[in-house]
Length: 489
Image 1 (cartoon, rainbow, N blue to C red):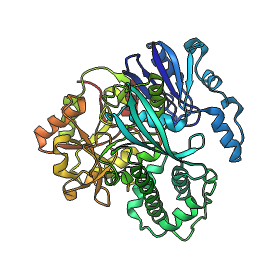
Image 2 (cartoon, rainbow, N blue to C red; image 1 turned 30 degrees about the horizontal axis):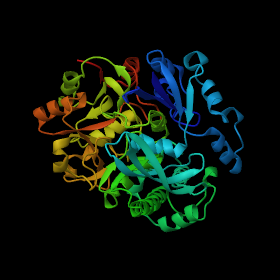
Image 3 (tube, helix red, strand yellow; image 1 turned 90 degrees about the vertical axis):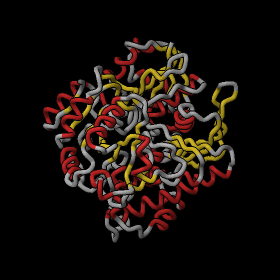
């Protein structure tokens, strides 16, 4: 029988299923089914898709609800009585007929993050750093992880607790500059390149060292004398200083030169570019936030290393990857979507639910931003054949590859590829190995015809909407927005 891992109740609900021999059978996001961005509740279509096919005998839950409720009481938010006990919380979302009285394991929030990273990595021993907004009480943890007789073991080395929180600070500043906290932090990160850092030291001291209760957010007139880009630049710089202080502390434990990094803050790919200054080898799983913890808690129940092969773990659209259909449109100068194979686990499309374009066109960035109804300053990512990546980008030290868009790199020839280069000359690169995947075959065909080994790759969605999931979603998206979506050849 299989293990069902659950992350739900607060934001970005997800489930994962691991087999008795450590195979990841499924991992997917509830929002892709409900069409509600960051949906905190498990959608029944997601539940049915998994539990009608894979029977379970164990449920793992990603945090300890009673401890979280105590912290909420302490912070003045009150207790949500319907979220106090794990089994009741799960039964409120999954019918009893699906789960019955199966074994239930509940784990610490940060430990679930740590396991999602370590037990999907190739490392036998690693220093694990988790940074997020908040779990039960923890906001930063450093762990020593290793395998002992095939079982993952974790030693807590250091902790920071609420109200100190880099994640809450970043979300509060996202709200301050007029964006949506808990959703638009990546927009602040992109906006930062357009501004000048004027107050990062002050922000670090005032909002972090003073331990303000950041769950209440930052008032609208906080730092009223600075504009949005200046606040964004200062926020990003302050966050980077804090992250690097933690990385230095983690390195000084001398547990391992391998770094596993998790928690929502690990999605800050600008800060991630310098992680190689602290560790020799780096692994960030492609869903390091709370959704990924559904896999982390399931991995804890399993006990050993799980068989991580790719992020394509969600809903499947069968058929041959549409290399011919996509290539014909791309070589004609069109923008084309692809919806094929299993959906990506994590917030970034990696080729199976993507919108592609030629990265060399000067008007392409504007056209794609118009299609996605996004702010024009926002950058797009290149996806490139891995063996060509270092010819075009300066991949930072510590990163053997960048298969999940987890760090930015300097583009060597930005004038040649204006559609995928940010204002500061950086690109959030996705490298594709010679793995026979659909996106690999499309890139090979594109390279053979054009001599260009990369494409612009962005998620197949519209701003503030979840990524397309099913074949019907793709057809409806194509009809509504007038952009062709290739489904199969």
